[in-house]
Length: 65
Length: 484
Image (cartoon, rainbow over the protein chains, first blue to last red):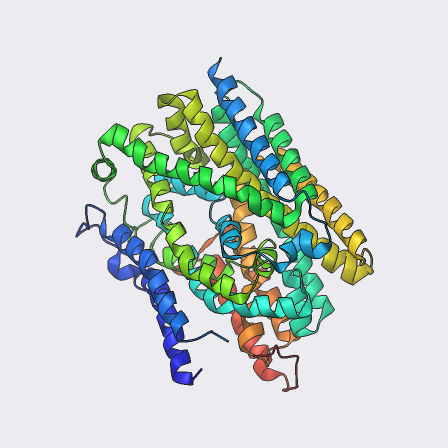
């Protein structure tokens, strides 16, 4: 596995955790409502739901170590 | 039939039926330590999924997540996020942990410390820490069990006796069946819990508010800002954004450090099985959304529960508005969600003690048959300790849970550095661990530190920093490096 591929892999897997932690101060709000859900809850549900896609993409780059 | 008799009969039938099903599944196995503790390292993706999912659906999630939605609002959303953070870390961490375990016949997390850092003392320290920290965590499950049995008994029975009987039953079950039996019992448990949670999160809001969205609108009308975090700086606001973010990070990093986790990791057939589980496990977490809905609905329908009583939220609503049969089925799902995680914890703690304390310190019970027997007896010993602690100190459980998380998460730097930084040695890890535990336990009287940050997070940072500092200061010398 090349260092570049390795970096991309870690970066891909790091995106959902960053969205679920460091991004929280920016999304701690009720509006706009998404399908009726308060924005904060909709944001968190969205990122948990798409995490498998990011991990699948990371997995395709090769086996980590 | 009286309502409490019907509800409790259903619970009894479900628990006994689950145990019988699991015992049938493992009846032909010959027990040696590798089968009893890590299921002979043979679990495929599906059985492993069910075992790992058990980590999510404990009685804390079943009652606690709803209770937090009821009593604290948006703070409860952290429970949705920390598992996902943990799986993203586990995607990289778990396969190498599994491979080292497979190559060197490791059974427990202290084994990993002992092997990687070449220090018996460090391994034993980790073992003792894991063993004693597990007791409050099991105790917490017993309190969850008591809430369920009290509500299902309509207050007519002595729930302390009922909890003791259920717990002794599950301890005897682990004694007999080992890890594989627990995994099979989790098949029944997961199906029931999934059904109960979907029912509570969808049927309850529909019955009282027409739809989950109707329920959300109602809650926000009565309790404005209930589904956002309080901004920092507001007086007495404990669960602010900094707390939320640091708690997710802390719980995510510490997720796999408990005594039940390493055996679950080692039980996998191969690293690929683990990786696939990490990829898809976040989807299963989404079910927690319905637990939140159940808690919010209870807040709107049966308001007024204060403090720890909030944990009864939607079960109390079930008791008041639904038939004893429906209550019994949902409560039995909850009972399994308390008993089965408790059983893997009992097994994990007993394995750690028999392998790393009896075996490595006293050189006792090292043969296959003796070690299996010692582990079995220790299962009963830990169960007895937890039950005693629970009977005498029921009230201070929130402190005990914090104690567990702060304590167990301090093992994370040692595990992570073990895999990514070959230069780190036993002294560095030991120094970081001691500093982290001291800061963590000292800060327990005020779990929310300056800046609104979770105090355990400071402890973790100090731990990692001291570990790194000692590593850079001591002279470089060759250490055992796991093949990369």
